[in-house]
Length: 228
Image (cartoon, rainbow, N blue to C red; front, side):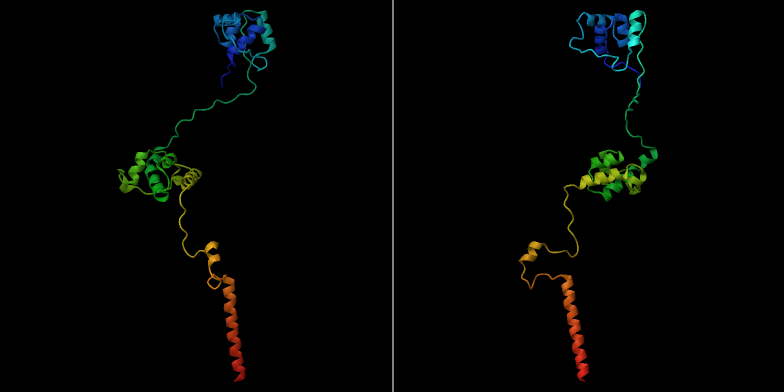
């Protein structure tokens, strides 16, 4: 990261008020024009700006100021920062290799078939395509529709499984859950209103009743055999 002075005008205000440095020295150190520094000294510019001490910020030392005051031709040197912050790289559009670009239609077809709840904007975010392409594939109007094969975009490397799950969960919010299939328990409100003889009996109780009947039959058969 380039070593630059923080708040040049505020620093110039402080140097004008607290040092005997020349206008040229202050202008060179703060990156200003000497006439601008003179206007600051005359009170014609930078009105209302509070001076900032460059010594406190670690950008200038007391010895450097003293040496500059002793030698009007001396150029002040900006101190090296103790901590360097790396420059933030500008994030551009994600680059997709040509091979993966060719697989986008297959990934779109897979998403359309396996996750119809996804909106076009969500599919576009996942695989980086346009809504018109999604509509063409959905309506089988794509120029290569006959050769498309559904392929998982995660396997193709077009998106991560986390991103896919997140978009699917977002699309599923507010949607009606499918009705359960097979035998289910009756609601308590219905079972409480039924007469005792019609109320469903627990499975364990039914099994116990059946077992009693079996033992009764066995005991009756045994008594008959003893009588004979």
